[in-house]
Image (tube, rainbow, N blue to C red; front, side, top):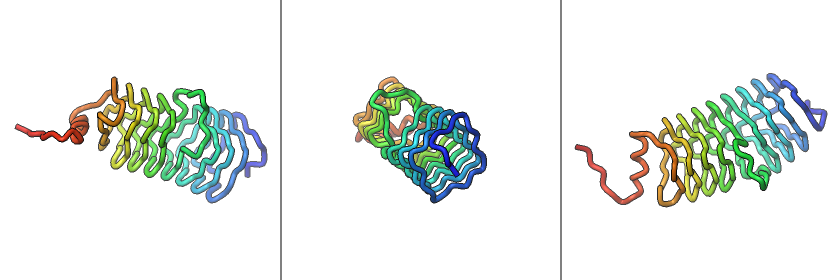
Amino acid sequence: MFMDSEYYDEQFQKIRFSNEELDSVRFYDCTFTDCDFGETFFRDCKFSGCRFANCNLNQIKVVDCQFSQASFTECKCVGINWTEAIWPKMVMPGALVFEECTLNHSTFIGLALPQCILRKCMARNVDFREADLAKAIFSSTDFSESLFGETNLTGADFSHAANYRIDPNGNRISGATFMLPEAISLLYCMDIQLKEE
């Protein structure tokens, strides 16, 4: 399927490459549309400026892979351990963009992903502990059972986001945007009583 070691500005459509392995292939400014990569093992691959639309990426492995300015729209990205990828020491803002994606059961522990975007996504049971997500956009995303702890959420936008449980004492939330009534959840961990009239 992928016979070359590098691809530039290629358009890949309706590729079926699930349960496969792909080693040391570089993709620059490529577009993947309606592709199935479910449970594929990517090792030492690079995706720079690439766009994924309506793709199945459930349970892919991204061992030693690199992502830069990669965007995902209406993709299934369930069960991905993003910490297995290689992230640059010099942080690049906006390295990952997810729009209307399913990210359930994924892991971003300790990653520096400032200004990343999760817009209109399903992010249930996702681990964001110790991650740097400063100025991230999380609007209209469902965070049911997701974990935040020692997470940098400075200036993050949670407009219309739902079901998040964020301890203000255990996370950095200065300048972050929240909306009522969901923002009341920030009080649940403070050992206080909330009463309605």
